[in-house]
Image (tube, rainbow, N blue to C red; front, top):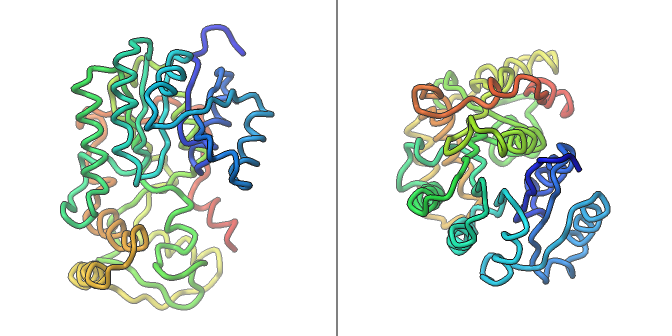
Length: 314
């Protein structure tokens, strides 16, 4: 490991993003630690992931977000803490934040966000507190006074893009496509491994201290009309377009609530409404909002474009 590289603790390494974060931390020569629940080792799929990370050089520490003693022991071994737990566990970060404050040795905390900026979404009351809880953690971090960086990467490529933003489908359509709203509002998709690389680059960077890092790479920001056009050019065929108005989409969101569709299956329509109708990912200018643009900070970082990703679905 290189001298002077921060020691990094990752919480949630068996998750999709967490695994990529651990790999990226190793790739950038950071001494890398993972906090793992004792029960995780008995899950065959997860224990296989842990074994591969351990073989690659990750130090596995047993503990959990509910266990203060294990948190303190883990935090004291590192300089940076990255949390990548699922949205359902977001509020479980509070004890961790208290421990980080108490330990006093952490140079940067990156909480579990990795999506839209919760302070910028405009869908209050529709999202089952999905963003409210993330915003609550931000306020908790800020009042605790610990140094932080928030990563706002918008959508992961593995979410909605594999079916070209068509809820209910598993693959992109070949005949008929639904377009929400007028189809001109732009959304952003970034591949998880790229999100991880940008995150690791940001963790020691003084320019990202107490800032939101936004990821909107060129080639990853498109409206639904543009996505459909790219896909049509790849399959060499025009699709029949069905436009669903904002009102109709809101009716569908309500129908999911009435039917008590279980979380997170009930969220697809909400996220589509937020991104492709309200424009929550792109309506604001990064610099004037006080954030920093990850692609401008790290122009050397390669990333997968939407067009390249769609090629894998042909």
